Image 1 (cartoon, rainbow, N blue to C red):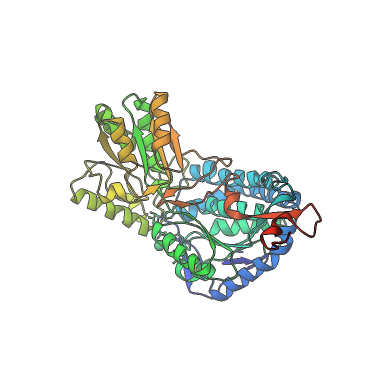
Image 2 (cartoon, rainbow, N blue to C red; image 1 turned 30 degrees about the vertical axis):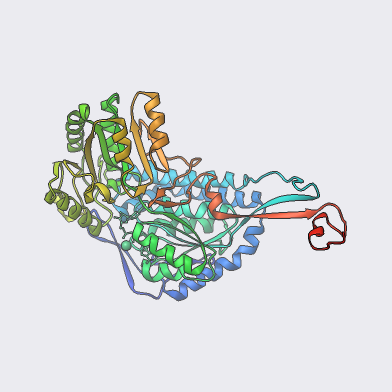
Length: 494
Ligand code: NAI
Ligand code: MG
């Protein structure tokens, strides 16, 4: 598959579109080039998915489950290769690839292999007295899916697995800068004998390859993870196409430290949760609201710990933080920090790209911003980089208000040793996930998805089946009568 761009109907192939380059952001070197898939590859992929649908959706849950377990086994065999490839195309530290991205993805496959046999519905019953009502949960058809570059393998798995576990077939386009591990996932699908056409991959830019999927009349659903702007554009296209939609559009997670919090835990938690994946995580801690009585200690603790984070070669086991995933993303982060400082905020840690050997890569120092206004860009907009803003608050009420004061609602955390405060924060913060005394962990059994401008619909867990299945009510007459009771509304004499 070395230069392949696509996997269509169980066969690897090469696109006919413009050349794309996969860059290692740690060095700027080219990892791979490939030709983008144009409309003809996309059409072939969609046709393969359509043709595979009747048989796959009609397979028994046990058969689908067995195929997914086989995929799990194949992925386990190539876990280290997947970790190396993920790090080479994203620059994420190899420890993160090995201990989070790859095992998390593989566990998701195992989860959906099991869940494929647990598609649930209401009990059948005689609700009218004269009919048996049955609920059928059915696959939707061909799913068109677009995934981002921050967790390429994991996002592909989150999109593909619930879709195919429920009996759908899929065409997925990864981000054009990070195709490698998604193509390796396709190879594993082949080795696992997942029937040809169930999983299809195409690669190329969003506005061409991506839109060809989203606009197609052959798809019944679109699922997307990425920026809010592109998500809304896709929503408009899906509305025109009449397709069902699932959107995960990033976040601006608050990290609320109450006055009774374990401050050491909050400091360490804030550094880990803001720097994970170099901050390119839609649930990353981005806004620390800290009770004024603890604010100075929190700021000095976080700044000190950020200063100890080792930037370096992402393949080195000792590296804590790699580069951003692209030079473009690094420049976006640098621009947002510059504008924050111009607006009167201060960087008490980082605030710049490192020099020396690291200048050849897309690196940016761990950054702590204070004295930013709540209404400012750095507090309101997604940075997607190793940047945390800290702001003080005076009352619990103010903390909750500030936590809810952005357009986003994906994730949040509350740090307190008081159970009542913890419950109150969990109830009142508008976010799809609220952590108590931690921030970041996810688990295959539990849903991931947003509120407000963070989108709608859930990834992972059996809740994702609500996106990827549709419900049919079957109502069967039990009386055998010619004249049904309700016919009195039509036939007056009776
Ligand atoms: P993006 O939204 O452009 O990229 C995500 C995916 O959408 C990629 O596969 C891309 O090819 C595709 N895409 C782009 N334009 C498209 C179109 N017109 N039609 C169909 N597909 C399209 O994200 P971008 O521009 O690379 O990053 C910008 C910001 O987005 C980041 O700084 C971050 O704030 C946010 N983001 C959030 C993510 C999340 O996990 N929610 C993931 C990636 C980015
Ligand atoms: Mg974009």
